[in-house]
Image 1 (tube, rainbow, N blue to C red):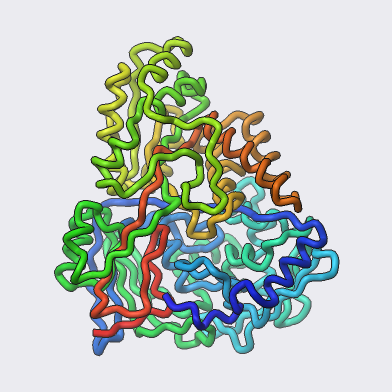
Image 2 (cartoon, rainbow, N blue to C red):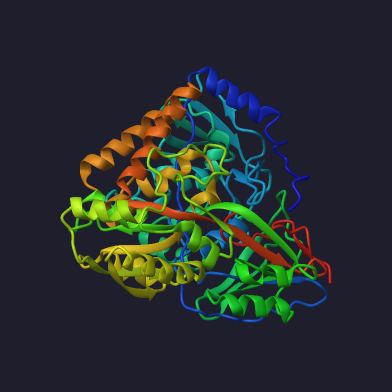
Length: 541
C-alpha cells in the first residue's frame, strides 16, 4: 500500500512539533485500545462481478458478528469495513501504521500548555449521502463516546479517548478539544474515533438503524452486508480526500474455512485472501505474492475468575505451564508463530519480557494444582471457530490430559460465544483469538482493551474489584507520566501483573499470512493484523 500520498508528511513536520509541544508541557503518552477479533460460521461466497478491472473480490477469514457503528464495532469484518467507509480526523495507514490527515485539513494545533487542540476540517468533505461533514458532527462523534446517553453501557471506544475532557464546535469547520492532561500522541490517537453524521445517530433508534446501514465519509460506501452473502462496497462519489477509491466496487466473501479461502484464490474467484493456512504457504508462492508478517494477534485462554477452581490463579497458571507451546506452534501453525513471553509479541517496539513466563513445565503444573487442592479437574473448553483456534485447541486438550486434566471441546461462532456462552454462570474457560492492534501497536492501547474498563475484566473474565483497580491505576499513571523511563517501568508492572494473574493471557502470538494475485491486484499489501485493506489498491487484470 503506497504512502506517498500521505499528507501528514509522516511524523517529520508539524506533527513532531505538536508532539514536542505536548511533551514539553509534561505530556503523558498513549491511550487506549480495543478490538478483539471474532469469527463466525463457515460461509459466504457471494461472487462479485465488476467489468474492465473495476472491481476487487476478496475472501476474509471471519464472518460478520457485529454491527458497523464505529463507536462499538468489534468484529474483524466490521473493523476492516469501517477502515474503508469511515474517516477519522487523522487516520493510521492499516499497513504502515503511519498517520495521515483524513478529514482534518491540517495538522492539529496545540495550545502552549498542551491542554487545548483545534482541528479544521477538509474543504468540501461530505458523507456518502451527500450531506456536508461539519464540526458539529465531529464534536458529536466524540461526545457520544465520551458521554453516552446510557453511562452504564459505555461504547467500546470510550477507553481510547479517556484523556479528553470536552469536544466542541468552534464554528462550522473547526473543532476544539479540551484535554484532562497533556497527551503526546493526540494527533494519532484521535484516529480511533471515526466521524459519523449526527443526524443519523442522534438517538437510540437512529443509532440502531445506523449500525446496520452505516454512512461515512470514506472512499467507499457499504451497499450490503450479511453473514450469508458477505460484504458489498462501492465507490463513494462524494469522497474528495487523500485516498480515493481506484475501483468501482468490492465484494468480500467471508468464511472461517481455510480450504475455501485457498480455493477462492486458486480458482480465480478473488484476488486476495486473508489468513492463508500455514500448510498452504509454500504451494502458493510463485504464482501468488504471500505476505508473512509477525503479529500481535494472539491465541489466548480466558477464565471465569469468579468460579471455582479458576478463582485461584495457581489453577490458571497450571494450565498454561502444561502447554508445550513450541510443539503446538510446530504442529498447528507449521511454525508460523511464537510462544508468548509477554502480553506483547516480541516484535513490538514496546516489548518487555514478563516476570512470569509459562515455559513448558508439566511437573510445575501438577505441583500448582496440588497446592490449590485441585484433583480430577474437568471442564468444558469453549472456543471460537477461528481456523487457528480449531487447530490449536485439540492439541492443548491432549497436553492437559498429561497432567490429569480432562477438558471437553465446545466450538461456536464468536457471536454465540460472547453473546450466549461467556455471560452465563456456567462458563469456565475460553480459547479464542484477539487482535486490537488494528487500532495501533503502542503498549497502552493494546493493554487497555483486555485489562481496562468493564467489557472484558468485568463482564467476561470477572476480575475482582481489587485487581481491576490495580491494573487501571497502573495504566492511568503511565498514561499521565511524561518521563519515558518511568512510563516504561509502570508498563512493566502492568505486563507482569497480566502474566501472573493469567485471567486472560496469550498462549502464543501468530504470524499473519496474506496472499494475493499480483497479476490482478496492484497497490496492495498484507497487514500485520486481521482484515484486508484496499486503500489505494486497484485492479490490473
